[in-house]
Amino acid sequence: MEMEGKTIILTTPQELSRVVVEALHSVLAAPGFLMPSKKRLLSAKDIAAEFGIAKRTLEHWRAEGTGPAYTMVGGRIFYERAKMEAYIAAGRVRPTDGSRRT
Image (cartoon, rainbow, N blue to C red; front, side):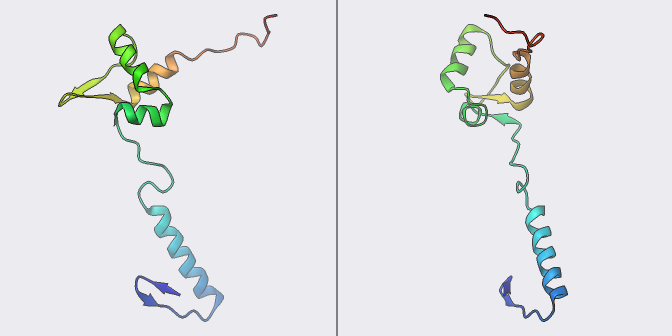
C-alpha cells in the first residue's frame, strides 16, 4: 500500500485499522466533501443549477419588479442565497386540512 509516496507494510489488523481511520479522517475533513460549497452570492447560472429556476424567469421577475432582491457587481447580477431561499419559502403553499377538491 502506498500513502503520500511512501510504501507502507502492514503486519497486523490493528495497523490496517489505524491507517484506514487516518485516511477516512483526512477525506472527511476535506473542504466540501460532506457538504458542497455554499456560495453566498449566486449567479443566474448558479440559481438554475441549484434551484431549477431559469435565467429567463429571473429576467422576467426583475423586469416586473418581483422576485428576490439582487445585487449588481461590475455589471453582473447576483442573488444572495438567503434572499433566494426566503423568496422561495414565502411562496410555499401549505395544504389546509387534507381534503381534496372534486
